[in-house]
Length: 244
Image 1 (cartoon, rainbow, N blue to C red):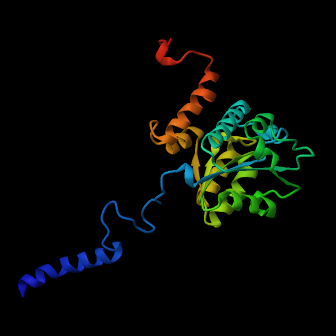
Image 2 (image 1 turned 90 degrees about the vertical axis):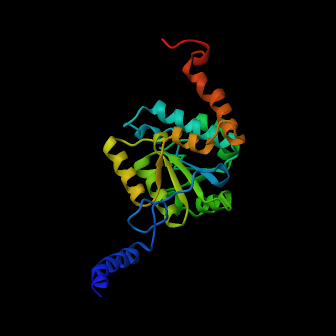
Image 3 (image 1 turned 180 degrees about the horizontal axis):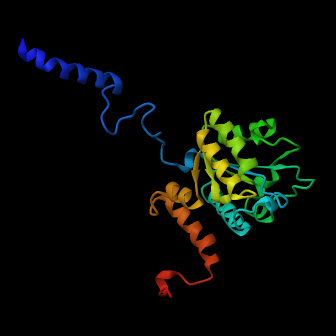
């Protein structure tokens, strides 16, 4: 009896702990106290949305160099083309002050540009029935939306949150866009992350999708980088010359 009295508090403590944790051990799934777990990006599960990359909207980007936004936008378009990732474009008031889609995007993805979805006032692209229908058709069974556009604080954050609510895994490529100022961009990032979307850069996106440069997907991404990205350095390959 004394021995049972001694161990009783210990047994009660263990029982309460197991009841709270569900008997979980490190590495197992858990509920509200553990970080969310996400599957590694896979090109075969992705589709891409390019929103309002228009000449007039580009003027609202002031927190980062517009050349950076254009460069990363082209990178995403080349990535989609190289990996056959279904892509949908949309524009807002393109016949008015927002202007046409930038030339570079038209040239890289001409078929996607030709089938773009024009919006005539809808700010949240997901609320546009034609855009929504085009996205669902392009996605098919794919569940991961790669989303980028101009600007982060207006054109990107709202559809990102809406699509999470529809059950999609949403990736926002932050450095392929910008906002009128740093505060607006940071506020947008906090909003979409609170809404369940994840923030990536173009480099993080391509490296996670590639995973292994010797794999079939990785080889395509690597070749795309060599063909489209390295030439912009205007230098010889680093393994052929020394760094200065």
